[in-house]
Length: 267
Ligand code: SF4
Image (cartoon, rainbow, N blue to C red):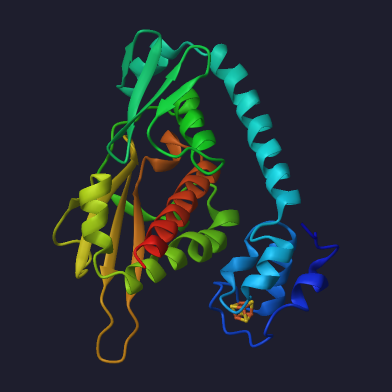
């Protein structure tokens, strides 16, 4: 399979219309993302089958680097888990510990890690999900929820992450919500989301729990009278104590990516 030597090699294959169908602002941004392995060539709908066969739908060079990064980070976290007293961590977090495993719920589904750092779950774990969850297990303070909601930008140390958060997480979720009418029903049904009422006058508000002490309130307003739709996320005031902001960003952006992928399979 032919590999790209630089981003211009990718750019030459594109329509250069900046139509954004690939979710990138320009063809050049898309070319850079493909070369760096952050997206796949087949995300541009105008690339023909023949070209995909020549170059492959993914950048294999990066994929193996990404795999290596994942294995390296997970290896380090595994060592840290081995040095952590999971039984006492379970007590602090209010979670179950039995058979040498700490078990908690991610979006309503079981996620367990044993004293040797081995993970057991049906959830697809990747670099966006596993490190934040393991960091929560090892260092979350286990503070009880205040049930007072604040936006991401009001969490401690969020300044450096706010812009990325709005773009990579909120923006992507809004796009999915706008394009898939059943999106919120799906969250309720598949990911244990709980509808709530009277929050910020939103048309739809629901709470999902990526981690037991990290609930997220999603408020969505349908487009109306020429106004665009509106989606906002809110966190409990304890969120930044129960998980560092960097991990909150990683986890929520990982979830937004996961929802986007699920939305794509909706057809
Ligand atoms: S979908 Fe293709 S043509 Fe459109 S902006 Fe993305 S790369 Fe360019």
